[in-house]
Amino acid sequence: MPVLRPHPERSLGFLLADISRLARKAFDRRVRDLGLTRAQWLFLYYLGRQPGCTQSELAELLQMEKISVSRQAERLEKAGWIERGDHADDARAYHLKLTPRAARIIVRLDQRADRLRNDYLDGIPPLRRATLLAELNLIKANLLRLESRAQ
Image (cartoon, rainbow, N blue to C red; front, side, top):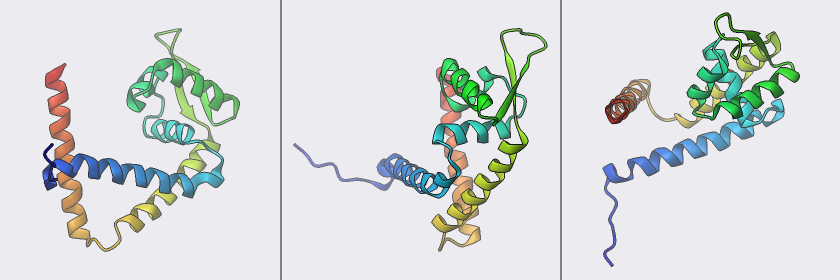
């Protein structure tokens, strides 16, 4: 059986997956004291980026099933993290928004994310960071284009 020798282009996906996994683990450690699960802080973070979205829209953003988002929204509402308001055009839908308490926690999450980002980008000069991000965004755009063609 032949041994596959990794080429840089072939191992890019593995490298990106490893970086993502390690960054998530590091972030989880840094926010553990806030008392939120990963699912909860992701929900709050995405809602903070799309205030007033519906549960269906948030499910799409989070790439989760609508029922899972609905259950999470119910728990977060009971805990005082979010508010659900009726949708003017659809009685079955809710508009979601963060409570002031959740908005404060988002600020803390952002601060910790900034510190982590600075730590894991340590040693990469600003110009190379900008180039790296631009190239990763190009890869993302290419993948989104391929996805839209497949639909």
